[in-house]
Amino acid sequence: MTGLRITRSTAAIPLCVAMFTLLSEPVAAQDATSPVDGTGKNVATEVSQLRAKVTELEQQRAEAIERVDDLLARVEMLEMRLEAVPITEGEALAMRGRYSAPTTRAVPADPAFSYWQGETPQQGLQGSSGAPGREETDDRKAPAPTEAVVEVAQQRQGRFGDRVGLELGLDYSHFDNARINLNGFLALDAIFLGTISIDQVTADIFSVTPALRVGVTDRLIVSAEMPYLYRISNFRSGGAGGNASGLVEKTVRYDGFGDMTAGASYRLFRETAGRPDLVINARVKAPTGKHPFGVELIEVEGSQGNLSVPSRLSTGSGVWGMSIGLSALKTIDPLVVFGSLTYFRNFQKGFKDIDEAEGMQPGRVDIGDAFQVGAGVAFALNEKSSISLSYNQRLVQRTRIRRVGEDWRNIIGSQANVGFVNIGATFSLGRHLSLISTVGVGLTEDSPDLAVSVRLPYRF
Image (cartoon, rainbow, N blue to C red; front, side, top):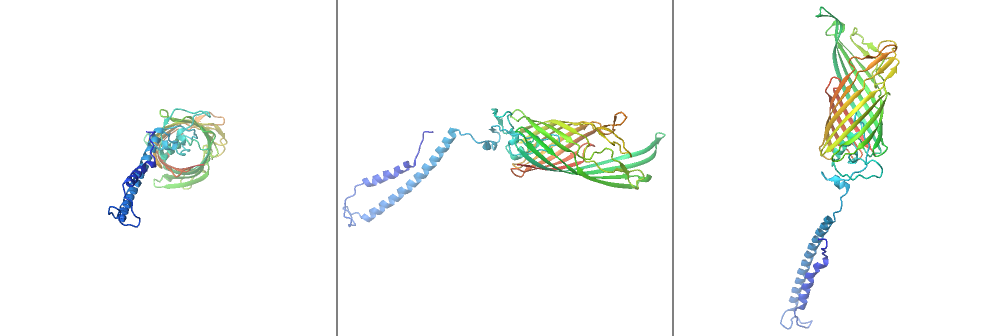
C-alpha cells in the first residue's frame, strides 16, 4: 500500500489518446479557401464536430483529475495510519478509556476542611514521579477526561502543579439549641420546688476566608489562610419570674479575626490504574482569634435571674493546635471516589482567667483532641460541572481545666460527636477560575443545623 503512487499526469492519458486518434484519421488535403473537401464534405461542419469532441474530452479530463485527487487523499490517509504517528497528550485526554503518559504535577490541600480544592484540567491527577529527571514507565488510564471531574479530584487532593494560587471563601453556619433549666430540688421524689426556665439559643456565623497557596516543588505545597468572622447569637428564655408566659431575649454580636492556619501537603503516590492517589497533609493553627475563656456572664434585665448572656463572643479556640491526615482518591470514570482520615491535636495553655465568674481565676486549659473520618463520591454532569456527596464525622474528646492550686477536672458535656452530610457542586468558569459550592446538613446535636460554603479558587 505504501508503494502506491498516483499523480495527476495519469489523468492526461485519455486526452492524449483521443487527440492521437483524431490526428491519425485520413483527411484529404484541400484548399484553405475551399468550403468543400475532395470528398464533398463541408469543412466548417467538420471543424465544428472536432471542437465539440475536444470540449467533451476536456470535461472527461477534469472529471479524471477530480477522481485522481480523491484517490491521492485516500492514499495519504492510509499512509498516515500505517506509519502509526503517536497522538498528542491533549488528544489522549479527550478519549475516554485511552492511556496517556504521566506528567509531573503537584500541590495538595487540607483534607480536614477541604479548603484547597480544584485545579487546571489533568494536572492534579497525573502527579509526579518523585526524583528530578526520573521518568516513570507505568502508563495509567486517564481517569478524568472532563474538566469537571478533574476539578473535583483536585478539589479533594489539592492543586498539584500551580506555583501560586489565591482563594476566597464565603461561609455561613446556623446553630439552634433548646434546653430546659431546673433550679431547685425534688420534694418527696415527686414534687419539684424551684424555678423552671426554657432557654433557646440560635447562632449565625458569617466568615470570609482569603487563602494563599504556593507550590514549592511539583509534589509539595505550602498554604496559609486567615478568616474574618461575624457572629450573631440570640438568647431567649421562658418562665421568667415563675410566669410560664414570661419571655425575655437578648442578642449579642461580635466580629473579629479567627485563628490563622498554615500547612503543607505532600503527594506520596500519584494515581495509577491499580492504585489511588495518596496525599499527606499537616497544618498548624495559631490562636489569633478571641478565646472563649474568662468571658463574664451578664444577667439580662427583667429575666429575674433566668437568663445570663456572655459579654462577648469568641472567634477562635485560644490555643495552639495542629493536624495531620492522609487522603486518598480514585477515579472510576465518570466517578471520583475519595476519603480521608485526620487527627487534631490541641496543646495546653494557661490563661489569666478561665471562669465566667467575677474576679480573676487563673489556670490552664486542655481542649480535647479529635479524630475525623470522611468519604464521598463525585459525578461529572458535563464538561464544566459536577456534583458531589460526602459524609464527615468528627469525635471530640472532653475538655479539662485546672485552676491554680487545684487538680485537673473534666468539663461535663464538652465532648462532641459532629456528623455532617455535604452536597456540593463544582463549576469550571475558565482556565484559571472555578466555583465550588457546598450545602451541609448536621445529623447530630453537636453539629451545625445548616452550613453553606462558596469558594472561588484562582490560579495564576
